[in-house]
Image (cartoon, rainbow, N blue to C red; front, side):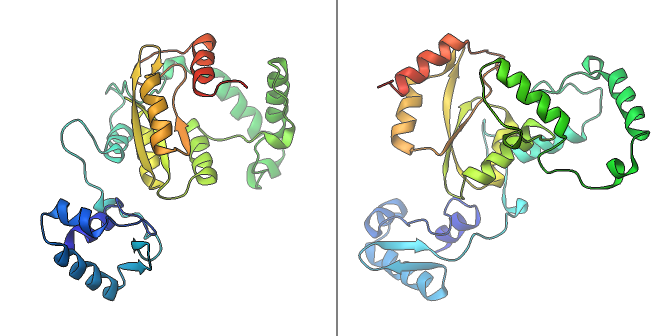
Length: 262
C-alpha cells in the first residue's frame, strides 16, 4: 500500500493510470497474490484507487497540485532540472552558465533597446498603461508574416502569436497539446529547462540519444513505435548542449525515413 501511495505522490502513477496486475505486482514486490489483493482492496476502501470490472485497478481522483517539495533530485547522472534552473537564475553575473543558452550582455543590442525605450516613453499613454492584444504587437506580427512569406510560409496575422521567450512558446504548446500522463520525446542530452518544463506538466519523458548529426534514428523510430509520443522537443540548431546543427538535407532524410512519402 505504501509503495502505491509513493508512486502516486511522486506522480509516477497519475489519476486514471492502470495499476500493475495482481500477478505482476506480486512478482515485483516478492509477496503472495493474496497480499496484493488485500492491499488493493484496502486502497479501494480508502478511495485511493478504483476497481473496474473486467479491467483492473486504476488510480482514483483528480490530479493534485504539483508539490515541488515532493520532487527530489535523482541520484547519479540525473539532476533535478528545477534545482538547476534556480541555481542558474540566482547565480552571480561572473559565474559561467554554459548550459543555459543565454547570450553575453555584450552581444545584445543594448543601444537599440535604450532608443526603443526612450521612444516608447514618449508614446500615447494608453500604450504604457492598457492591455494590448494577447497575440502581441501587431506591427511586429505583420513584419513576421512578410518575412515568412519570403520563405514560402503562408500565414495570416491572426496565426502569429508573440511570446516573451522560446520557453514560454513551448509552454503554450504543451498546454495546448498535452495532458498529464502523455509521453514526450526529448534528446539525451537536452536543454535542462525542457525537463523542468515537462515535469511541471506531469508528462512521461522518454530520452533518445543524440549524435553529432541528430537523434539516433533507429532508437528514435523504436521510441515512436513503442511509446506513441504526443510531442518531440529538440533544438534543431544550435542544439543545446551539444552545439550540433542539423542541415536541411539531414532533417529531410530523417523524416522521409520515419514518414515515407506515399
